[in-house]
Image (cartoon, rainbow, N blue to C red; front, side):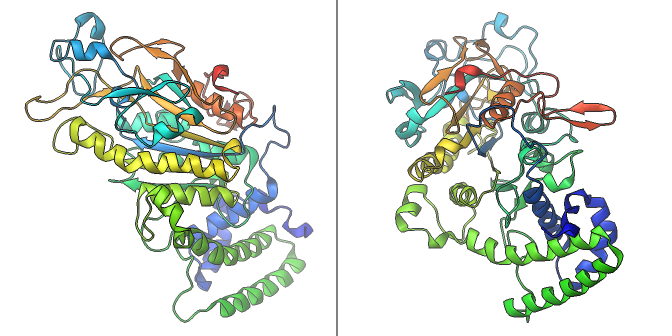
Length: 481
């Protein structure tokens, strides 16, 4: 490596914008692309701050399937026969005494699930008829039925599960991971965010923020329309050969200037232009899923050129193959209060499950047949669950309110003990009563699978050492193969 490039990772984003950005935009490369590209080059060279991992590595990368809105565990994963017996009757007051809900008031009525449940696979996992594709891979999955959180509003709960704290400003899981161990990709961001569904999460970009970590570790959101990253395409009149020649000329001038004044900012600029050029070829090739065989499209249910969770799942596999460390898919639309058609349980749940079931199962099958599942940790879940009590008018629609004391998350690959279920809720699916798992426990376990002790990956900010799991979290050893 050129000795003048060794300090690239010492250049902060603010320093870069103050001293380099003004000159860079004159050549037609936008700020977002340049800052991201420079950051990824730094991460690839630095390899993260952890030169030695804390214990054996079981997972090398993460695909996080974030179901935004709070999927109902009671209608997908957690069958409760007593809800059928007590359907329409007031909930026992002892169950809800002292509890707070987002919308429910008084003594609401019990609501059974309108869906049927069966056991599947050698593991005997119980799933509803909303998830036919997941039943075919159920023995590759481990279910946590006893998840719980502290935040019953969407934004804070989403930020909490992603950053370990309910208020914006902390680094997200993907940021902590790329800060810790860097990325294997030199042509793409180490942390990529893909959105689908009705809109972005309520928590917004705080869910993939780098917080107080250097911004080179922030998640890079691929846009749903147009170029996935701004300015990755050449402007009209600029072809690849002309772009290469212009970058060569700029870098020759910069190199001469670097030899003269030894300013590390110039090294940063050289590296940014080089990576920008690489991205112009790597990104279009990445997002062109039309090159995939027809059998792959049938398996995922993808349609090239569309924005969908299915397309994003296929993109996630392609990103994994290219060495990206953390890929997070946010799919919004799970907020089923029963206010209107498609926002209730009867109509809305089949709609959302129909969008995610086949692609999620296909992703596991695809990774497995390519030999990537063992080294890729796949996580599926929302920010909280749903109440066993009815919200809304049962003669018009059926909804469930936000619920923080019990919900289900599943994991696969990456060192997870496949075909297992841990935790248990009470007869109503209301309280986690066996092996409760908090948001911090989940994140601690995922970091452990990646070879990281969650108590030792820290960053000092305002006089305190922070970590993803705040001041809590225990590794759930029963989940680990």
